[in-house]
Length: 223
Image 1 (spheres, rainbow, N blue to C red):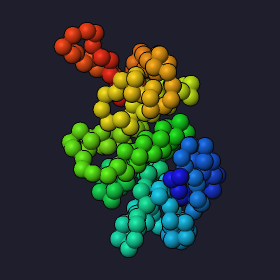
Image 2: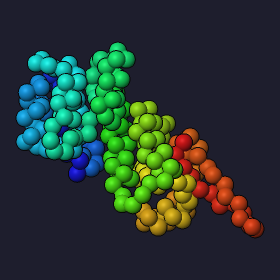
Image 3: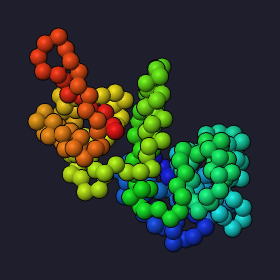
């Protein structure tokens, strides 16, 4: 589980975000903090993997908190900024301090969920052993860079279709229906049917691989 701490001065907003985190598979909200002092203590007590961090706090600002956490000994949690601050200087500072992403208030809760899903997939792919080639590095950056705008298929989607879309996203290279069927425990026709529908909706791209003879092999990658 990805242990997540919500930091927001508005108690109502913090509760909404915490509830949203709890509804995303693979995440658990380990607490809410409403000030810099509370956030520092919660990080020490709970050792979260991820912060959802507002920058406007009553006793300081989120940028200073992020800077202090980066300078402290021990593991530093990843951070998704959630704030109404829109000036480019603040955005640039957040990026320089390693913020995973920057969500500008107001935003829809589906957008937050999509960003959390993207972060989870990024962690899965980044946790592998061995060396990374350029394609792997590009895939890791792309997972977070393109996460803020949900693809057109993220709305009403059958559970199996969502699993197939997630599997294509984390594969790092074009993948076919047979490989996905084996990985997810579904039939090949089922995997192909959902891949075709995802391609029709614009969520995945079709790659045709031609061999020496016969029909081309259909492989799919995230759009």
